Length: 199
Image (cartoon, rainbow, N blue to C red; front, top):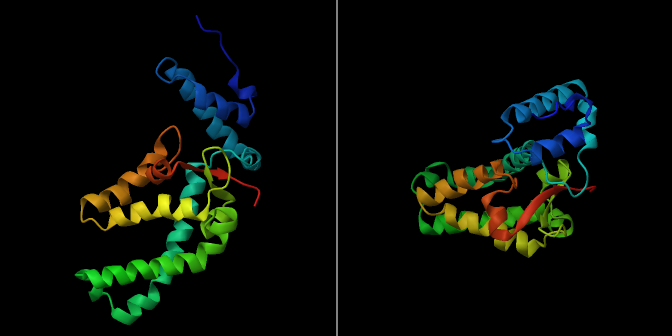
């Protein structure tokens, strides 16, 4: 018979470690208990959550989501000039020339808005706000070429393929973050991860 463990006396760091390592198939009730205590401690002492975000630790799904929403909002705002110039109708039945123009416009605005942070810190504006960055698997900062050519470009190109490509880049890609490694599909392609940083 398993000895009763008083998980309520554990710190959040210790509880997170237990939640990561426990065999949920073998100890489902214990895993449920740990999850419940984590939720309770996070609600009672939200200041403790920040203490668990150590530099080098993998970023949480929530923090990555907030960063993604910030970057999405910036991307949508950056599209206003082109929408104003050509109108919404151009997006309904786009020509190859229009698709190419939008692609290079997106590349240009990405470099203008995020280029400095990506080059020096491995961050977009959203990631910088959330204090997370893109890293190689060894923990070193990913280079701009790795971030764009290996991480961003493949998903952008796949997204141009009707239906299947858009499904992969828009749905399958982000859903990968719910795996144990907390890495999106583009992270596996580029061999990167997203971690907390002091910058």
